Length: 450
Image (cartoon, rainbow, N blue to C red; front, side, top):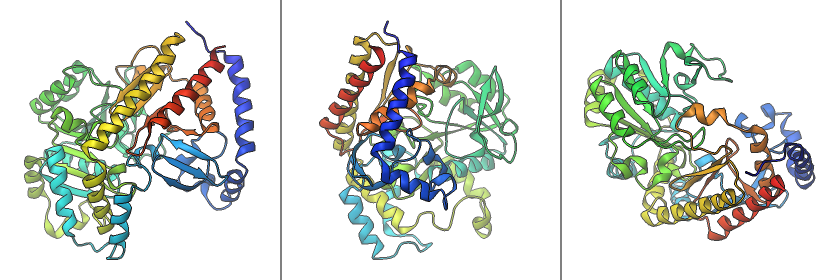
């Protein structure tokens, strides 16, 4: 079995850091200037997560490529951490955005496009009633409030190492079988252990035990975990999840913000899942801020009974700019022209080839790594076996190696998602883009193992 040379890894990391700094002088200058007016030198603190010591500043982007302020071009497999899964500035969406911008941006009144979008979401995902938000975080936050309101229960249930946006109740983890704050959780109003139960994904016994108290308003879950590596459900797990939530009077919320990469109807549509509430965001409007949540007929009826018209604006759900005309127009263009069967077929086919290229090199070198695919999303983890839950995935995280590979790729014109080794295909991604990654992946493995 090939072994990564750790001493050599440190030396190569130093070399790559020097290379990055030398080749990105304009980005470095802008970053230093930004530190005088932007906290941490970036407009949103996650942007400090990139390898290299400072972020690349983008000048322009189109399709699956972008150019930075130093004139360097990149193949973009990050795609805004899914926000640009449509590819950068797809022409149909841009045309719709420009047209709507000339006809008003926001009214706090509906447009006819909202009807088209809600009807299309119903067709794809199976839930009859929809509402719009500006982010997936908002969609999840509102879904949790609705679940508590209609069930009369206070607790929610999440899976260990889940991620559902910046939602207070979900920043919780298991350590030594005990719940506690997730590391880095900043200023929570209350300890999430007061509001939330947390169990491991794929553990049916733990699921039933947690629900059997009959005090859980909802389970909120990605149908496939994606934020600690791609973790697929075991065969039959979703059947058990749906059966047990119904048995114990608990609502099921499925968050498909990432797993929409499974196909035009997401994982829910592909496998005919039956959530009570469905949430989505990020790429649904081709990069314009937007999110949505869908309600089953039963939940919509229950919500109508507890949501008074006189107090609807102080209910804790909704927002002045939610469902604005620009976001809705962008959603319609995305659903009608970008998230098509043909585009998903292409994206998933390229992801399969991407995974095959990585897997061939890993197998050829007998590396204790693996690659996993979910539709148009591919990820490689530095452990031999595919994890069944968040604890298994987190236990073998290799931050040193992860940082080096991101930096090595970045220095050769490839952008991966900064939070993990995730690559996402867009309708604009080409065979040449995938082959280029395979070539650079072979080079980095050669350096690490010889």
